[in-house]
Length: 371
Image (cartoon, rainbow, N blue to C red; front, side, top):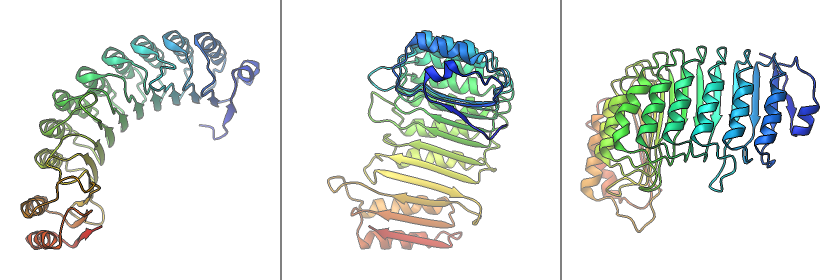
């Protein structure tokens, strides 16, 4: 693929261009207030570029709606040589592009014709595509038979459990996918979707690297509790070839039971080298943010780090809580333990943790710090 990027930042200039033999094109049309009619003109012009191997177009914060997505889809179906494609149609709560479920389906139909596509990145943040839209989009991805890398930003699209499951099942049919990043914040995804979501992704037999953001904010967004975290771990534990896994569950009501269950299941993935899990709003309020990182490279066992940012009004860690934390760490057979607390633990509780961790035979490095 070519390294020379041909950048155009206005539709007027693009319509006047006639360098149809270029193979790398960047269209920067963010916030131009373009509607479906301009998207149609863009699509017609794009069809003339038969040699494109790399295409990125940014139409975020425009007003193309579902008709505009249709015109873009039609142009993509003519781009037979594309190997790398980045589509940015993101919006915000004020609407803008708002392609909806029909627009998402049309995009999928166009992408299905891109059989040489190896890398695909789509940003549909705040587009109200819903469960039907994401399912129909995901179903078409299996036709991208060369696809190896996929990035989907579907934040705030009301996918619900049905959409999350359908998305994972559709992606699971992409036999060559090795790298996946899914941004699914604020999508009303709950406990019931977690196991099937993990199982669906595990069907990607070539999958090596996976990032999933299932963070929420309150019950109106994602709501994954202990049982959901445990079920997610059970599903993902079937991804037997994974090397790197990162899961974001920030601002979810997951306590130590859910965190331990998730971790226990993921320990079954023998090929896993790096595991990072983000938790937030832990119940009981031991800490607001926990980041667990496994890095099986320098050390034979995982690395665990916990960072705490709770304001003073939340509950402090008591002696039993300190003991319970240390017990979980001992059971995980860690090599390196780094714990950082902010004003929620006293020196006596730090001593409890250090004393308990002496039972961990694999431990080679320990830091317990009050910040």
